[in-house]
Image: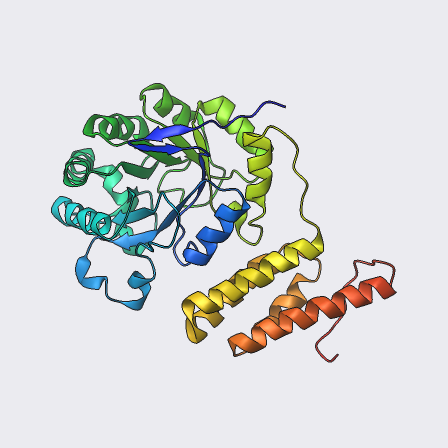
Length: 346
């Protein structure tokens, strides 16, 4: 088979595997970034960080800042509406160890757009240009832009934004195949991405509804994109990055992990969430991720409901260890049956 992803250049950084982990609020923390990269992703963008430095000392913001223990490139995504604040935020993050600055102009959340940030900026190309110029000139590291195809179907100005970005010195684009008005509904479209790619020479990374290697191959062929970013398609199944890596980089079919391997991936992930976030936040994040893992299991509703009643990190971990042991024993006794059983009283 033929590989479909090849190294790209972002400033001084060579991205050997342009298979990106999407920045998702409340998801793309250090444990998730490390897990996905271990699974085969080449790049992981940190969660969106406000350009308002006065908010950086909050616990939430502190968890989103650069961690020098992570292998590069360390990418910090910033969001805001004021060119000077954005430039200052970029400089500070580079001083703290960021290797690449990513600018968010794609977030459709109301609390972001109401401040004329995120995808709301697509309504004002002149402001987009001022922000990009300021940020690019303020740092010595590459700057990338994550955006959408436009504000709405009536204002699908992605190609204009792409030309502005390249003209200001942005090193690469990541484009979600929806407008802000679409949010995450309907199907992503890639015709606009193809048009954007035709008008620029910098790398373009395609994002949106890409959940299988086969879909990625189709999108890459249709758009001419240089890489793939995966977000929601990896929730509860981070091993998809292994499948993408095998198929798109090595050019061979990948073996899906079996149930036991998937469970161990989840167990290790939960432990890393506990260690990173601590008792209160770790408990909450573990519930969220186990819920996503459970969504891909035949006994998922039972697993999720039982797990959500547990109120300590230690008990969460013990429960998962014992649950898998009991499930494995019962399946063996039943001849590897995939039926569900209530383990809550065992």
